[in-house]
Image 1 (tube, rainbow, N blue to C red):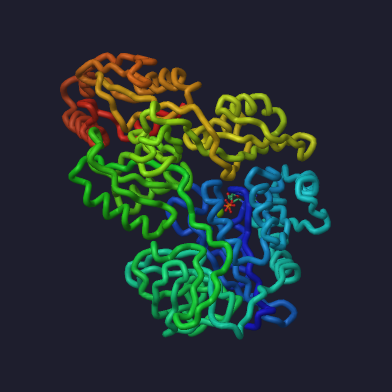
Image 2: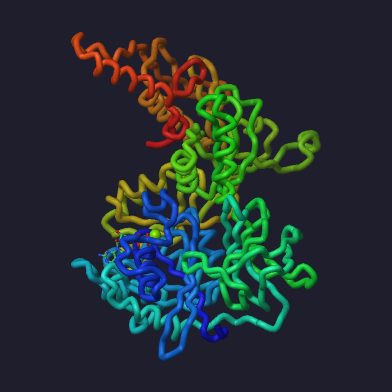
Length: 605
Ligand code: GDP
Ligand code: MG
């Protein structure tokens, strides 16, 4: 296929605006899947994705489409649709010359629409604005077009209107992709060069790479090398994803395809890396930006006998999710034993990972409250010498440094964007202030909707901010954020004691202004989530040895069969069995049984 007949594009949209549905229609129209195969959302492969309705891992498909007697190759790069994964969106965009900016004609522009637009815009990518769900009774294409015009200066005549569900207008979108998006500008005569933009693990073939060829061509048997790792491989197979694998013998510049080369670990497949022929050195392609975990949490087996199986499950899962970082965490862990410290892109990423451990590997883990990475500037020559540097980083509350050796603490900030109907403005602004947000910007995007921007500490949003925002706005406000800088902050470590024993896994790092409020809230919450036990339990919160809050959990003898009068033995057995199962999900900490969700739930409202 000549380069001028290739189009590389992706669909970017706020979650639920219909990206997967539109992708399915594209697959049907181009014959990649049969109509009414009943298999909806073909590109969403994971069980969690179907359940949560969000795309976690980008999947792609090469579509063949004939227009005016010319055959085109349309490479659709699917992108994940949640704030946690915006880094994955940007790496997918590095392969694209165009994007479809899909907006629900009923909901209108949302926070992710804004973030996605500027991502594409700043990369000089052609943007095709498309309104979806025009079949809905309360669709307001006029109003939403107005928003696109106000916010992004988009010409209303350029906006397409479709129903991805019914298929209305969808073919016009494909035509617009061909007419408006330029073909990739690549050089087929140069020596081979490719951008590695996705990878996953296959038990039999090792790592499968998804690449965008920018120069020359690639054939089976070629010897290739990575600029980043300097490692060499022999190409075993390559081909197109349509979306099923369609093997071929060569991939030409401009194309997107998969490659296998006996690569054993996804760690070797650094997203954004440049590949080249082993013997022909090339310059690295721009845009290598390693995925950076933002949120860290401890992961532990329910009991130590499950240590090996949990480790193997984590290893397997990480093979398919290179955005997760794993370090071994041990020795200090009094209550939970040996475990790991995992880094995630965000809270949703963490929950998805946990759910996949459970569903795909039947591995139940205890996950501790997530934390962000803080920094501390050290005081005095002696301390600097001892640590070998003047600034240290830590995410685990256990490693919170002694405040007397710290000159200044720093915490990471984000720039958050919120879009909301104006009737919720009051409660949303209070919520942001409560989370230490500082307003930077506010703009009316139509008669009833406002866009707000707040500078906020990352640690204030990783736990529960998103749910609270949804709840104060009856689900109408949307939120997205991007990384900002580190700023000076007054941080303290809030410790939790159960019957006088400090439980490090429950301790957390908070801003000084929150110490007593958080302490009280955590004690109350623990009182609520810890089941009553045979002994009385004192729950205390402390800062530097000073108790700031206290609750007492009264003892209680749990006898689930007490209410049953004699006779029904099977019912009694059933209940006893259920009680035993309930026990399995408990974790012994400081001689107290804690439900495994305690460590995260304690921080939620
Ligand atoms: P994604 O999160 O952007 O991938 O969104 P999905 O494709 O999963 O769609 C979210 C929901 O909107 C699903 O329930 C779809 O059936 C529905 N949906 C998608 N397109 C349309 C449409 O054109 N009209 C209507 N009425 N519903 C749609
Ligand atoms: Mg989807």
